[in-house]
Length: 393
Image 1 (cartoon, rainbow, N blue to C red):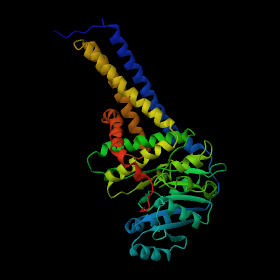
Image 2 (cartoon, one colour):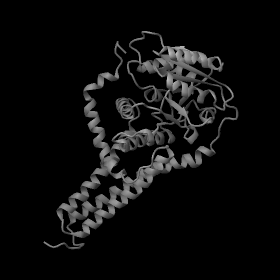
Image 3 (cartoon, one colour):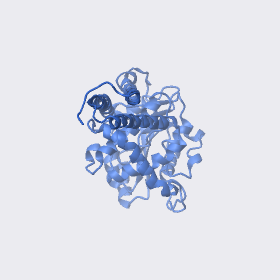
Image 4 (tube, helix red, strand yellow):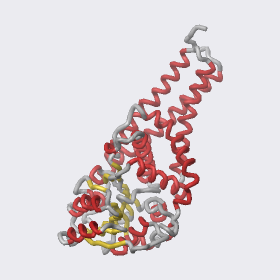
C-alpha cells in the first residue's frame, strides 16, 4: 500500500489528535508558568522587596560527623564571612581525635567559634535532629542558621544575603543548596541532574507562591523561639528524617517564610559518593512526602499523566492510519511544540538553580522520571522501617 497525505481522517483520529494538542498546550503552559514564577522572583521581586537595615546576630549550627577534612575546608569560609555579629557552633558527633585537635587550634584564632558534642552512646534518636537541638540549645542569639560540614559558601556575602530577610513578620528563611554537578562522572548523572532540578523547582516555586513545604537543612534559618514554641522536633523524633520538611510544615505559614535564591546565597555540597547520596536523599524525600503538603506532588503527577497520555494519543492515531503522512506530520509538530519549550524552560531553571543546563534529553527524562520514581518506590517498599529510629541508631 502506498503512502498518502490526506486530511480525510476518521473522527476518532481527529479526537486523538485534538486531545494530544490540548494536553501539549496544558503541559507547556504549566511548565512555563513555573519557570516564569522562578525567573520573576530571581530577576525582579527578590531585588525589589524590603530587607532589614540592621543585620541581626546569628548562631550558625554546623552538624559534623567524622568530617575532619570537610570541616577544615568549610569553617574558614564561614568564619571569614563579611558579617558583623555571629557565632559558629560546631556539633561534633562521633568524631576522631584529629577533629578535636583541629577545632581546638582553630578556636584559639576565632573567639566566636564554639564546640559542643553529641553525647557518646546516645540511642533511639535521629543523629541529625539531636545535633541540631544541641546546637540550638547552646546558641546565644535569636536567629539560628543550620548547615553541615560538607557544604561550601561560594561567597563571603552568603550570610548577609540569608539574614537580610529577617524583616518583622518573617520567621523562616529558606536558602538553597546543590551538589557539585560537574563532579558527578558516574553513569546516570544527567538523570540525577534532571531529578534534582525538578524536585528543587517544585518546592522552591511552591514556597515563592506562599505555600512552603520543604527546604534544605544545609541552608535554612529560623527564629530560636519558634523552634522552642514548636517543642523542637518532638513530633517526629521517631523519624530519622524530617528536619527540613516535616518540621517546616509545623512552623511555616503562608506569610512568615521567605526564600533566598541569590547566586551568592546558594551553598555547594560535597559528597564523596554522589550516586549513593542522591539515592539516600531520594529515599528520605519519598518517605516524608506523605507527611507534608500534598498539592505540589499531585499537580506534578497530573502533569506527568498529561505528558504520557498525549504521547499515547499520538501513537494511537498513527497506528490507526499508519500510511497517512498528514498524521505523522501532525505528530511531529506536536512533539516539537513540547520539545523546544520544555528544553528552553528546563535549561533556564537549571541556570537559576546553578545546575548544568539540560536541553536535548529533557523530553526523554520527562517520560522516564515517573517510571524511575515508581521503580525506586518498589525497591524501597520493603525498607520502610529503616526510616524509623531503632535502639541501635
